[in-house]
Amino acid sequence: MNTEEMAALIKVALGAEKADLVIANGSLVNVYTGELLNECSVAVKGERIAYIGKDIQQVIDADTIKLKNFNVPLPAWERPFPILTLP
Image (cartoon, rainbow, N blue to C red; front, side, top):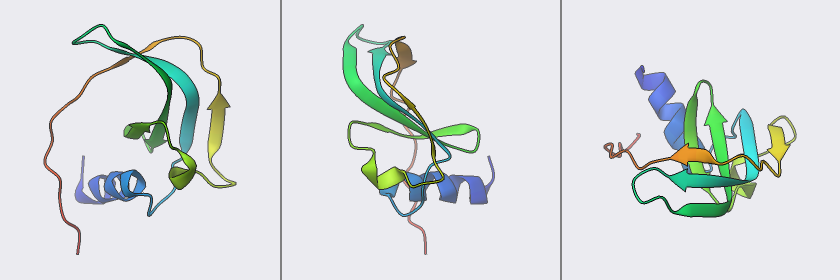
């Protein structure tokens, strides 16, 4: 991943840029705990996940592709990564 891709992911996560694809109101399975997380949404920018959470209004606009009520559990995990401060 180059610096432009990383910057775009951070901007989507912060709500400063819109996602390319959103899978809304799905269920995620935490692969570490087995916990089922209901009504979660996944925002994708380019080829990478930029945001996972319940409030997706900050990452969508008219051009965002939206898939709603996704009923197949998706694996979810937390991957620690450094948070970069952009100029």
